[in-house]
Amino acid sequence: MAKSDSKRKKPTENMGLVLFDEVGGICPKCTKPLMKKSKGQMIKLFEIAHIYPNSPNPHEAELLKNEEKLSENIDDESNLIALCRDCHKIFDNPRTIDGYREMVSIKRELQRLSGLKKSWFDNSIDKEINKVIASLASFSGEALEELSLEALKIDSKSDKTLGGLVKLKIKDNVRYFYSDIKSKFSELDKSEPYTSDMIFSQVKTYYLKLKKQGLDQTQIFSALTDWIKNSTGCKNTEISEILVSFFVQNCEVFS
Image 1 (cartoon, rainbow, N blue to C red):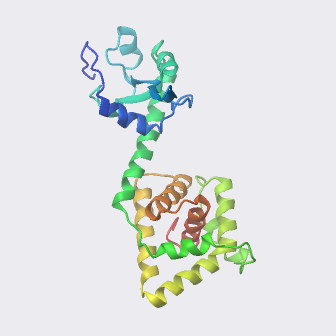
Image 2: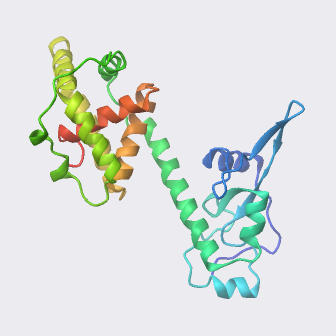
Image 3: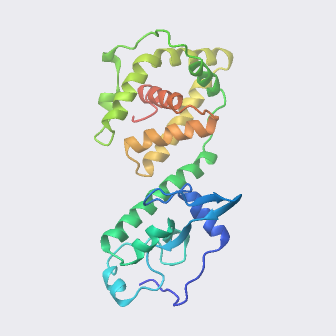
């Protein structure tokens, strides 16, 4: 059993900022804002909760004795989460198995998303891809050369973890934009040989890292979209999704 001091340690101000940032400024349980502006001042509306209790009473110790702990150090960041005051009170009183398991699941997802954000800085993508992004951003809505339905690879590459709506989005993106994007990469290679090969390799490497982490196909599609947006400065989610769909068809993703 994890050792805990009878005296609760107050999280530092920096820890509070880290945990506030982890949940994106909203309560991960009820989505209430965790800060508000009043009379020109920012008012804190959240508390830091221990997922596994700081000083479990006999009932809690017995209740959670076979449950997963996110850290043996009760005051470690992994065992702390920012909640609004109401959700903190409900979570603590009374402590339940279902409530505990839900909070562990929420924290694990927050850790996964935080890890992905940190990985963006360690995995770059060649800046030349911005020329392809600029081309997509200037799309006027005119008809493009469509890829035949028979040429689509997503049906043979997807598994049951790829959501139906995401799969349909990939199909549409590939059908209408694949040929045009392929042409744009060919143009890049004429001015800078092997540029497309470098970009394809970078995408493949990051895809494999996500796959190694155990992400399913829907999560991978979303993670790659966020990576391209943040690595290139692209503000348009749809453009990033079109590019990820291209890489699915071009075999860097889900291969």
